[in-house]
Image 1 (cartoon, rainbow, N blue to C red):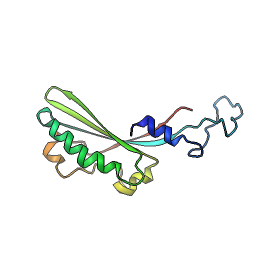
Image 2 (image 1 turned 135 degrees about the vertical axis):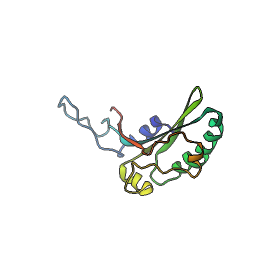
Image 3 (image 1 turned 90 degrees about the vertical axis):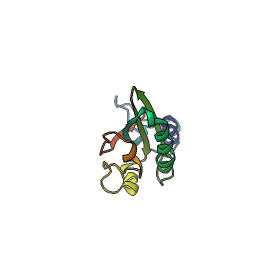
Length: 139
């Protein structure tokens, strides 16, 4: 599920509160009010030798992305891949309603990477942390 679909689903009536207008104008009626959608985006990055990128892509998707998508509270996950010569970078982006939903599976320290069993076999100088971003769609 991509981020645009997630944002559209979250913007359904009653799913979020209306964001007041910056110019101070009166809010629209509930039937026509536009809402801002707030979610947390979790992003992990890893690099592998390009010679093993196809193998790692399958492993990461099967053991990582599909697992993330099955976690209660998860709003979706995507895997990105970019090759640059001898190194291929992978980014996994997952979407969450809030940080509490992330803590439910990642524990209190949501910044700490939880490596897959075979990650150390593939990864080059792996990041030890995950980044989190607050995302807001414009009404």
